[in-house]
Amino acid sequence: MEEKKADGRVQQLLANERTFLAWIRTSIAIIGIGFLAASLHFTRTAGERADDQIVVMISFTSLLFGLLTMVGGAFQFYRTRKKILNFEVPSSTWVVIFLIVIVLLIIALIITYFVIQINWLS
Image (cartoon, rainbow, N blue to C red; front, side):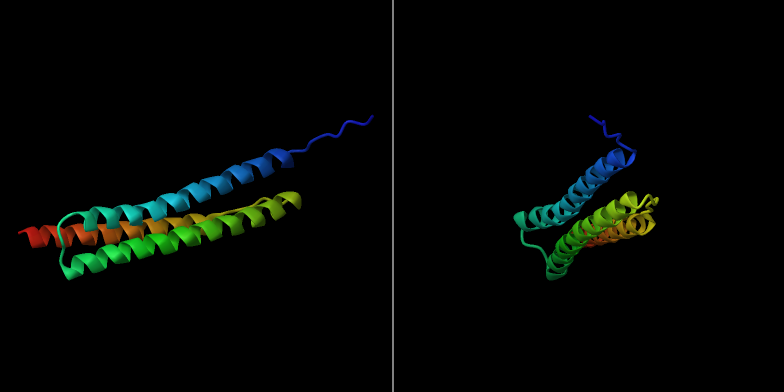
């Protein structure tokens, strides 16, 4: 019986699957930030209209970008899988830049929310 030799692609494919699961966890965390911001805001005393709009914007942005991260992770998974099977070296530069922009945008919205809160407490 002939033994099949596994080339390096098997490990690369398994690593690709682990990376995809990491993208899913990241997208869930991004979505969770929006739900956390909304629940912390709306469980305390009634805020001003501007506060409510910013929190809704944070939540919506987090949900939207979390879903885009999930879709992008799936796209990247299949793109990388195809490249691995064709003995090509995959690169994920655009995904890293996309995620950095998302996180910076959400952080900017949260900072805006806190600045408004501090100004209204004064």
